[in-house]
Image 1 (spheres, helix red, strand yellow):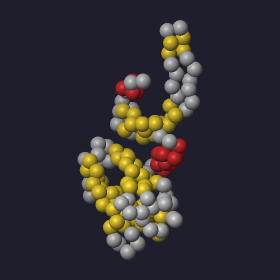
Image 2 (cartoon, rainbow, N blue to C red; image 1 turned 90 degrees about the vertical axis):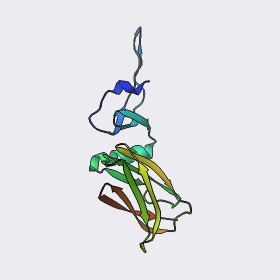
Image 3 (cartoon, rainbow, N blue to C red; image 1 turned 90 degrees about the horizontal axis):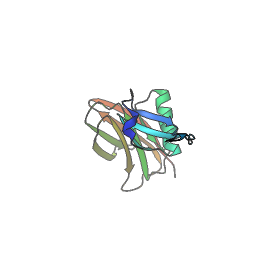
Image 4 (tube, rainbow, N blue to C red; image 1 turned 120 degrees about the vertical axis):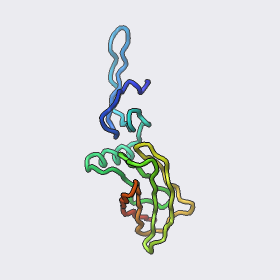
Length: 146
C-alpha cells in the first residue's frame, strides 16, 4: 500500500487504522485495527503495543515528548517527540549527582523517534532525561530498577 494515499493529515501523531482491499468484483473485508505513526504526511511504521500505548497517552495528555519504558532496566530507553521546532535537538541523561551519563544531538524534521542504548547499563536510581528543542528544555524523571 502506497502510504502517499493518506493525503496531508492535519497533525502528526499516532492513528488507529483499518485497511480493506477493494477488488474489481467488490469491497473486501476490513482487517484488524493497527496503530501507525504519522510523521508529517508519511507513515513511519507500525507500532508494537507498548509504543502504541505511549503514543496514545501522549496525545491524550497533550504531551509533545515522552521517555519509555519508565521504569527501565537501565540498558536502553526510547525517546519520542512530536512538534519539534528546530532541525537539531539534544537528549541528555543526568544522574542524581548531576553527572551527565548520556548526551547526544539528533538531526530532526518535525519529530524524533529513537532508541537510546547506553554504553554501560545505568545503575538503579532516579535520573533526569532532558530534551532540548531550540532554547526550550523539557525534563522527565526516569527510574532505573534492577
